[in-house]
Length: 449
Image (tube, rainbow, N blue to C red; front, side, top):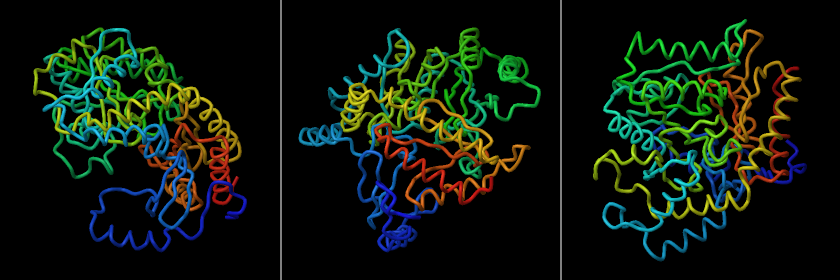
């Protein structure tokens, strides 16, 4: 690659460089191989949409810590707020002595999440914990046991969240038995719909299948909640129709089932709305949030209808580190920054630029079977031929080469053949165009027309 032609990417050596290699050796000796790593190097500094490693190589970050950095690396306002908070207290534990940032953040999330009804919010550490507690609350409120999730859905790696997750490898293989009373239903995948079936027909078929499930498998009277990602993340950025999402909401209302929206990856402006459910004009009963809520600090939230959230008694939900003061302070600044800097609107501009480029590439390369997304949550799906056979191997090679050339991208999808973009919403036009140029060049080098 001709690095002199690049404005933001600076590659001074091969990846990994000498410092990273030494750290890799230490990592292999001391860290189990289970945690996956996308780029074989180590961060030294992050700012906005740029990451610099320990060997001085600068990357354009199109992964954003798997969607955790909509506000970018080290946003100044967040850093300043954290430094100020450190002089007061770090963690008195909300269950021991309460603190105002927890209440202020709950107030803010109750205000900005979908729906005008009375809401309440409490905090945990991770997306998986939020999912587990949303299910606990739903079961407590309804007095029912069964939980329905969807094919290709991802909800976390803890036992219940893993049970709700659909992809077997690498998330579930060998880790059973799983939590009981969890069931999977189909979720529309329009690119892979049967020939001769329209998107609307597919929606109606799946919704009918859900209704029939109550006759053939589990009665609706025993179903506490249906949990869904409004856009499937790890499942390959699969976007459903408004008809489908509203159809699920209607079924929930018909049978007294709660609807849980898992907005861990889609939330906080990623899809061009503050929360993805807003695209479908659907208000969930409970919502789980994490990732971009606090610029990378570990905090998650469950927000829901006040009467539902109040059903558990004191001590039945919570956790020692849930809603840490640092996470709450960071989250409040992130939301302030998103409002003042209009980052939700910016997500739509970013998405339009990415989708335009990807659609141009699709016209040139037959291996790009589908281009899809919502806002700045964009992806391409790679196939071998007109049969739509997934090409996981090509996707892996392209991802690896993009990373080697200084643009961090990641894969996704049930078949591992999707390349997804989750760049920080603070990325500049110049950085975005440069990163997309690199992806285009990698395709030109690796794929025949």
